[in-house]
Structures are given as C-alpha cells and as structure tokens.
Image 1 (tube, rainbow, N blue to C red):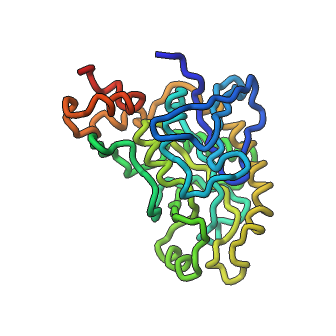
Image 2: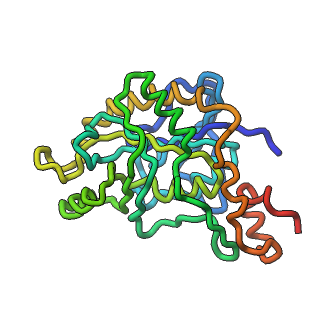
Image 3: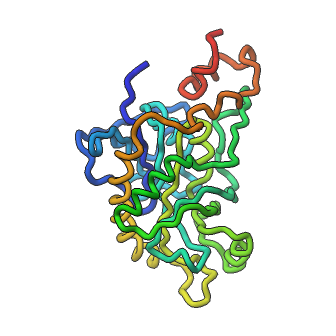
Length: 291
C-alpha cells in the first residue's frame, strides 16, 4: 500500500479557501469514480503534520451547496490517506446564546437536503453504517480544546440542521426549526458527514456563526452582506484553531470510526460485481477477499 500523502483533511467552507502555515505545498488532482472533487487538494505539512486542504465550494466560491460533489470530495481525501476530517462551515444561529462570532462544535445533524447523492453504496452493494453519533467524539474534543487555547468563544455539542439552499430559510421555516430545538443551520454538512462515516473517516464540524437566520425579531434577517461582514473575523479565528488542533489530533486513532464498515456491508461478497469492487476498493478492500 502506498504511503499516505496526508493524515488530516481540512474542508474549508465559505470564506476559508486556503490554509495558513502549510509548508512543502503541492497540488494533487485526484480522479475519482464519482467525478471531480470541488478543487485540487492542497497537500502540505502543518507543524510537521501532513495535511490535505480542500475548498468545498472551489477556489473563487464557484459551487453551490447542492452542486458540491460530496462523494468525490470524501473519496479523494480517503485515497490520499486522510483518516480524520475537520469540516469548517459558516452557519446561522438558532439560539440567542450562540452569537455571531462564536464557534459551535455540533454533535448531531438533521438532514433536510433533497437532491444530493448521500451514499457510496448503490447499484449492486448495500451497506448500513451506524450514524447515531455522527461526529467523532475524540476529534471534536481535540478541536474544542484547541479553540479554548486560542481564546475563542466555543460551544461543544448541539444539532446542525442542514437545508438544501441556496436560498436562506423563510421566516416560517426558521420559527419552525426553532421549535425543533436545533442549534445552528447550514447548507453543507449533509451528506458530507454521512459519506465520511461510510469512508471510515473521523469527522468533526467547526461551525462558525455568522448571523441569526431570520427568526430573531431584534436583528436584521440574514443577508450575504451580513454574513461576509462577520466571516472575515470568523475565518481568521478558524485558522488559529486549526493551527492548534492539527498537531494535537495527529497520531493513532482510538475511536471506532475506522471500523464503521466492519459489519455494515450486507451484500454477499460473491454477489458484488467485480467492477464495483474495484470502484469501492479504497473503502471496502480490507473487508473483501479476492474473488
């Protein structure tokens, strides 16, 4: 097996299109059986740790949330050796206590997306991964400690509601979601988190609060201008957190994320077509004997 090119993947969302501090940088363009990733992987070392950075929307913010090729993005990170992914996303707050500028590390998701491919397993192979706890607790705890160390106002835990977009919520929707008790709202972490689990990657979300959506009677309804005004400071803070988190996250994994597929594949091995075996080899190869 080839030596991993990177150990930790960073997926940058709105405003985070590059990673400060990377040394020995090179671009890696990965071809995947699911199409093209959002952009080339920027592979380098960050304080001695091999990192692969991927701009979720592409450099220049070219790709809308529903048009992101989430399968290609996760597959590409997997094939260069990434075992842990820190996902950075801009979100709206659904609670008074989560203010613009704060960082939230959610541990649950509600998926309201409608037209996104959300699994690697289809057309001849079936797998059902456990997703009760979608975030890697070990990785999230590491990011939490890193955020504290750089002085960020950080909240650990909570539910991220993922909508289809690209439009923001109506006021009626926003008030309904508030009744559900969700903490933040965004457009990009689903199906990203589901695919990371299928690929046996540790996954943690760093949600950067930019606004109060449109539920807050004392605040203006969310606009792009509002988001961009807060985003600059949020991104600078996110980079400091990542700089502290990456060295602490590296090393041998002690969580169950790396064996998520061990009992999940329910299709009889002899019934899986050879072409499908080859396509999914980076994900399932260790569990299937050669036919």
